[in-house]
Length: 468
Image 1 (cartoon, rainbow, N blue to C red):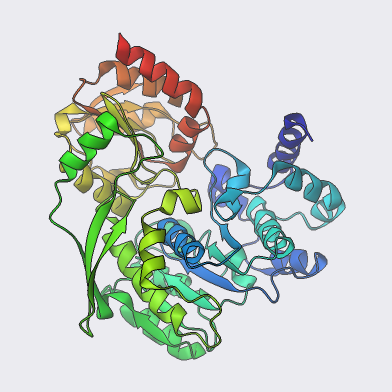
Image 2 (image 1 turned 180 degrees about the vertical axis):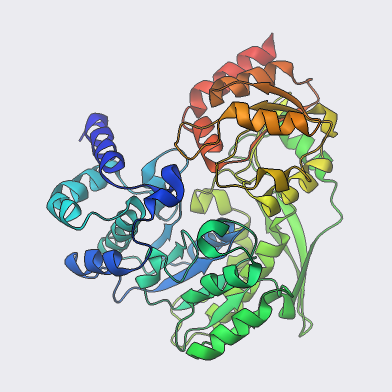
């Protein structure tokens, strides 16, 4: 197999199948589970008989999924699958085994073997990738697989599986055109992954929608716990700015800083946990993971219990063990660059809170692009007024034109510049930002993806420019 075969296979899939990540709601020709079930049945129902942890929510589900993947490996689980979306640098990131993307030749072979089935059923891109993930994990004989929900939960393609444990992270306003305009409506869709008799963990007890989860769990007979009822988690007294500066000046992608979080349970258990994800907004995700691990360890006939030592080891090595990218990811240097896939109101608010602890807004240069279905006007209330914005757009149909984004920001008093190509926008921002400033790439996972797809070359360009 050569790269041309893999590239041709992806081109075929993108051209043949509707892709929500690129097209938005237009790709949801059939928003139900019928096609996924038919597809899986034709493949021999690869999801049957596997052990899954099913993770939904609005913000944080990718981080929680990756943390669980990491701690399971640290606990000695020999083969841990991880399914996430969208991918950033390469399609095979969507289904990983012990943090490593699936082989490209496996994808080429799968599509070649099942091309007639694909053309007969006409699944969406996500429906097919979900079935591919189940097949890959089955063939790889995964002991446990962590499956991140794509959109919603109740009618998401992943919801054809039978989980051992379900987890739901914080609920926020995203995909309101599909899931509904209120938090209770969105929560009801997320709670659709609850299954009869299967323990369910919800992270934060949010006043607006906690009752929705209680009712949904009772309706199907799922034992439910809220992580925030049992645990408190806070970062230790750490100077995030000093930690960031130290890593920016001397660190490397293989030497990630670690933040220690103090946790306490309502039963009096107290301790410190290291986490290699620097964002202080990870506090709530860690809270969710703690409860998920507690419930996991109580499952009957548990073959892979997670000890405190495994928990600490896995959390300190999340990126290494899971392959997670784009969550407050730091590229060291002067100036430094931060990649973050924050793309909705809650995500942007959390990112800005973290940045405020590190660099004054007037020394921040944002490479910023959003999708058309995101509430840019709502994000404006959090985007710092004195920061500088290089507005851009990823090369996907869902992307909002850079000129439109710039016009909205300029009308709200922001300093803006338009650079249509994402990579060029990063170079422009890097050349304008002061050496003690910060380049922030955010607003869309696809903007971050465009950077990561040329990471090696771009890093060389940025280093060369900094030398001059």
